[in-house]
Length: 181
Length: 121
Image (cartoon, each protein chain N blue to C red):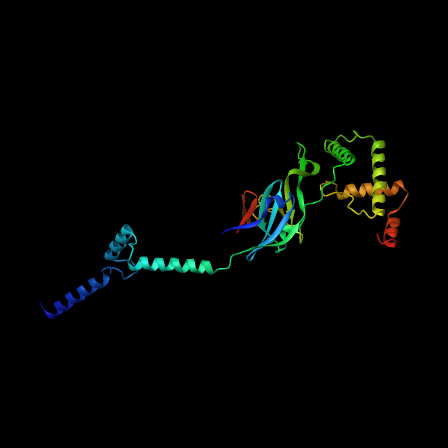
């Protein structure tokens, strides 16, 4: 073999070596490592070996730190009472039943079930009762929480009430500002 | 997650609420129709005290066959609670926002052991 051919052969071998896949070079485990891993998985952690001691140590450290942690306590910040429910007197029960009947008639579109005279009597009586309670210091909202009264409903009735006693809106405004109501 | 004792069920009336703190968490515990619900007291809108506002029945609109409105009324069975800051309204049973159910308060499980009520937090 000439020196030229020998150099050529060496270069070829070097190239083959460089191109050959190197086990473990790109982060993949070697076949030996794979076999060791499979064996370890199959056998599990044997007591007494280094890994078992390490796991036991970690467990004991965690238990210690858990024991040292302060126990979380429930601190009651606020208690919010239930909304007031009406006292069930027979008259209150009757009035609530009547209100429910009126509401149902309105929902059903049965607007003539209660004649105008009955409506006038109810509105008048309630107006006087509410005013008397207000004077006595029993202040409460004119409409309860569970009511579907709309802003338009209120404006219609307020307008009709003012008209019924020949009052103008500006007189209501004057009275409210003078009496600080 | 551990069970944290809140109170005795006999001391907790229907319609009442308790605002409690467990660690860093502020939680609102509700009792509604003998059922217990617990939610984060941190409104998803701007961090207001979501569980401390009004409790109010859900507003339902009744429609005729031609889809015109017959008016609004309060639901007989569904209850909502409203954040007092800006009125974000949440369903009492799920903690979901009424308008956008994808938005919901963090819910905590309630465990009842005999007469004792626990929140899992």
